[in-house]
Amino acid sequence: MNGKTTKRKIMKKTMWFGGLLALGLAGMGSAQGQSSPAAGAQAPVRFLVVADKESPLSAATPGRVSRVYVQLGDSVAKGKTMVALDCSDLDARRAAADAEYKAAELRYEAKAKLQGLDSAAALEVELTAADVNRTRSQLRIFDAQLAQCRFVAPFDGRVARIHVKEGQGVAAGAPVVDLVGTGTPKARLNVPSNWIGWLKPGAHLDASIDETGGHYQLTVTRLSGRVDAVSQTIEIEAEFQGDTANVLPGMSGRATPAKTSGQG
Image 1 (cartoon, rainbow, N blue to C red):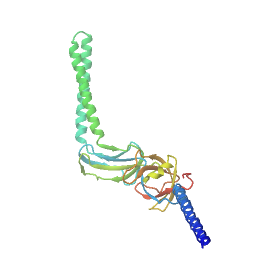
Image 2 (image 1 turned 180 degrees about the vertical axis):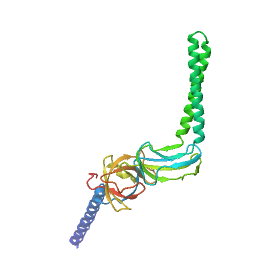
Image 3 (image 1 turned 135 degrees about the vertical axis):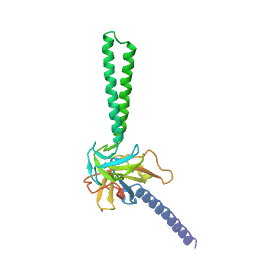
Image 4 (image 1 turned 120 degrees about the vertical axis):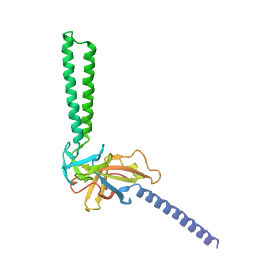
């Protein structure tokens, strides 16, 4: 009986150590699997497509729309006037200011000549010179106000939305036209913070667009300077590679770590 009891104890110990060894190996395998996002264990992350440049133009002063020169989706070059307000009153006031400026210049030139002939005091010349500067400044003010009557494209782009119609009155601060750039679009997404170990500028993501079903590769360009403490995610920007003619701002999709990105 003693021999049988001893044999049973040895078998129990062997099974116990074997179980511990199996658990340890399983834990190591699990840890190794988690360290490689490319292995397919990572869930896809949602992203939003944004334009390389975007400018919502709004009215700086109240006015009435006189002309709308563009239509929805039009491509425009930098410097093109897209919408103009009726600023005929400002035009008339600028013309009056211009006439006053030219008259001030003539008075100054006349006083300067008289001073050369000892027929005008230095104070008179200085006063006429100051009048020239004053009227010139008024002219510049009107020029700045007239510039606000035209909404000019700040970069090459496409018209994304027109908020006004001809004849419509607009208040100061009201939106007028939205312009998006025609450069390579970007993807903006919040990824798990544990990706930081391999996610650097230049890393690649595989992406698919929901609206078109198209597949693209993204190259990470920027990472936020902090991790969101609540969601434990970090915001990043990535640039699309290849032909992006069918990728428009506002589209969305899903991204996963690229299998060839070398992370893990």
